Image (cartoon, rainbow, N blue to C red; front, side):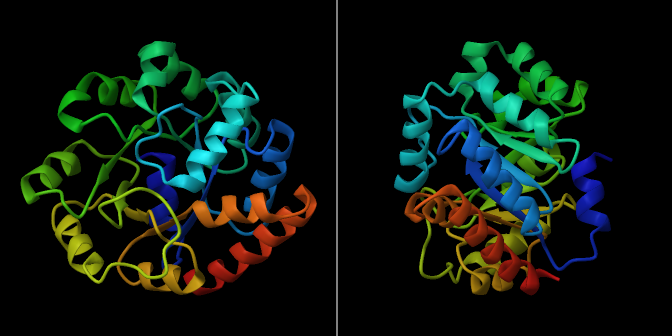
Length: 260
């Protein structure tokens, strides 16, 4: 059993808290403050995005953070360096588009991720039926391939993903891109039930989760809560990184209260 699954199965919480940020945003130095704020706020694991010029699964907030990171010259190696600085303290999962993996070299990238202590890799634009080599290479190096399912995924595809998944399955709450939303879909419980019926791998929900109330609702039927755009908004709207860090920690503490 991987470290991710061990933490899910041994936590004792209703659901685990996984905050997201773009690696190197707003700067490399300030990103370290954001990651420290995640830990201070009670994060159980951290998701970090590798900046990419065409982030098709991301909404405007994450896209803007990605663009800012790219303009500052943040590279996959920089994000791997950040991961290596935190992975001994908390599990780190990277979200990376396959073009980055391909350009880096698939085996070389997975080896670098494993060396940095990365626990899982999310590649949103790599379909499971085209990712056999990637999944096998991840497993060979002790890295969980985190696969995504969406409300539009038919049952037979969910079964295919469930068979290949480890660590956890990333359940996309909506048929759309990342971004804070005022409410969660009323179809979400039925969608999660369809996935749960086909696997015992832990399920985490992301895309649109942005308030403690959302997190409490998600914790009723999932094992993990992923929050990203709301946290990036806190950083972008704060006058300085210290203020942002305190606001993030306070917000995550509020979320954690409903997940215990």
